[in-house]
Image (cartoon, rainbow, N blue to C red; front, side):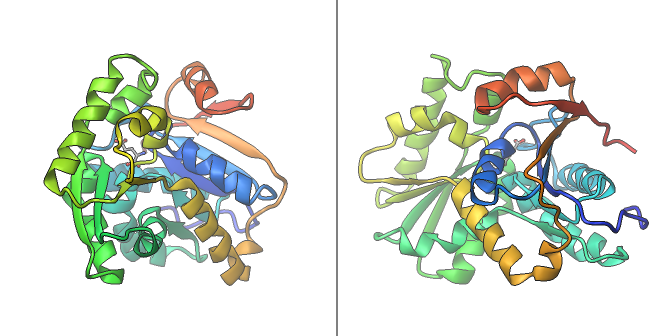
Length: 281
Ligand code: DGL
């Protein structure tokens, strides 16, 4: 990681492998509209879900470094796969070598904190990428706070590619939505709360709600992450002072700009300008 980074205040960085982080960014901007943001989607290399720990760490570190070089002091990994596989390593191995105290926060902890007050049966389910499920990050984080909760997870390897290929509303998508929900619920009939542990999944919410049995609460992450960030900035005035407040948002992608604009317009209510960036050294 570069040692000489800009020391003047800058935007808050929001990173995802692709479009999924936009679901987090929109809730963050609703809760904290006064700040400036840079969104970075690694659309050229998405999905991360089935990639190894080493590769997800390498790609995420490249993205975080880029956002730091662009002036961000605080970066949110708006991606569960990156939060599960890279966040800890970056916090332990990379951030301590920087001159300034830059920070990287993830999405798993803020999601897990609320779960104890939602479930009544104390049986919860996680729908996420293969990487997030295999990492066991959700059961580990949940059991640190709520050792009594039973956790079952189901990997949904086709959901991110369906979103990234603009098939979120497609007819064929229903089959795979139903399949993974049914497989999860078959593992534990007492599940009363299901966490959508991938930031792409809210883009599939209408279809997920169609197949989720009544009585089961579906938890999405955007508002939880936004309120946790608000709280973090309140508790860390020194970091708050290093985040600029102009209400702007810049979008960056590793893919072609036109592709991002075309796809992002289905997820965002505003016209966006996009800059293509390269993450490879
Ligand atoms: N939005 C990412 C997540 O939350 C998607 C991962 C992927 O690229 O497969 O896990």
